Length: 204
Image (tube, rainbow, N blue to C red; front, side, top):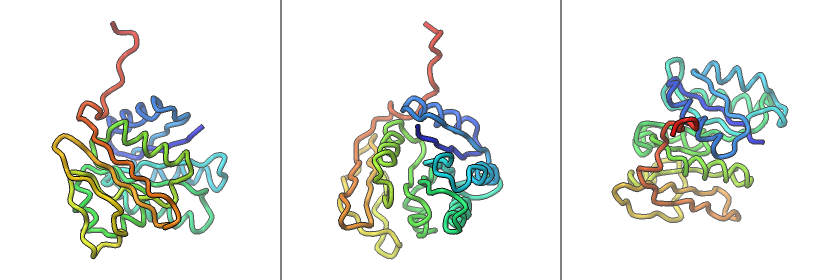
């Protein structure tokens, strides 16, 4: 089964995201409250693909380190052969457009960029891409609520884009490999799809 690590210093966020991942069929949804704890968990599993996480969902801002710092440390460990390959996804409460303007290399550090509040549908699309083996390379480069980043960033040109509509979120994916089909996983997601705490099955 799929193994996912959720890294966020907010207990509420880690609980909600991990609960949603389990509802989507993830076998193991582990959590870390800091970048240091996340690195320790990943290094404990080492370079064995049978033990390492398939996916890490990382908050952009944490107390001990920023999400970009954790991603750089993870990429360094991957290049040194200390970790088995895994997909890195940034989860942020900030504007993706603004973040890409400030840090253009985010598109190289992370395989996907998602804005909070993340919906279960968006998480499901990420999991589908990882399971189907199409996650290398792919990027979530914008949402419908933000403008397309200017050409000065390091993000490759978009293949397509949909106009913004109030109350919807479009997640666009692109591939660096011209031979690979573009993952145009764009959809109008209503606000009702945003993550809510799981209902108690014992309640009426």
